[in-house]
Length: 134
Length: 123
Image (cartoon, rainbow over all chains, first blue to last red; front, side):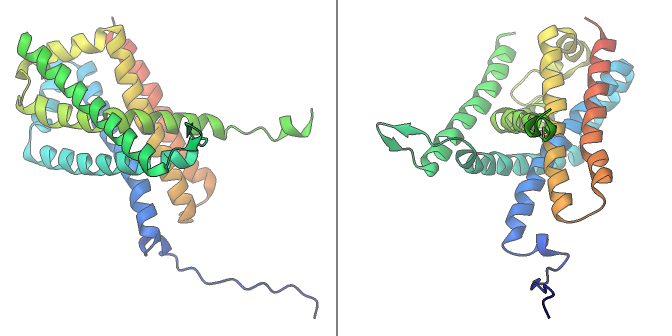
């Protein structure tokens, strides 16, 4: 009679593929795309250490159409990682107070996204300018 | 030893690596993918020789280049490892020690391999 029998709502095993949790799953897996790109770079480093022939084969593979498609998919995933990263960031840091008022989270996200875009564009610009000057 | 010391966990270390990888990839990830995956292999916007063996070897032999390569590969893996681990844990995909080995374990091995290769390539 006194036994505790709490109610457990059933949770399907595929909860992570269902709304609204699928947004969470996609966000987390976009972070895994970052590691997949790291794996491509690691493969390049392994080939580089092995010598010119291995590295030439690596370059051949990276120049293929399939590689271009993979990199474009990774690009989309990582851009989503960037967006969600800066949507989450204001929730993980202490409240930022400017002129006695807390800065809205949406504004922090927007400012960070602009900064991230500037960083990425600057990196590409430096490489392109160095390439053009050399 | 008081209670606070006993409860000390190693989680903040992983959290720090996860955050560093997340921030590095958030700031430079899209540019790096376009650079090494699209522009360098195809010679779009940059001289094609920037992607050849001599140039890449020169970059990997430079101490700052080594640091960049190590930071990008290792931190990107630690970032993915943390996210994959927490997602698989929430999916109840398997026993936690196994999940840790498959995520943090892989990131640790990759970090060591990257460091070893960079030292092997020389200065």
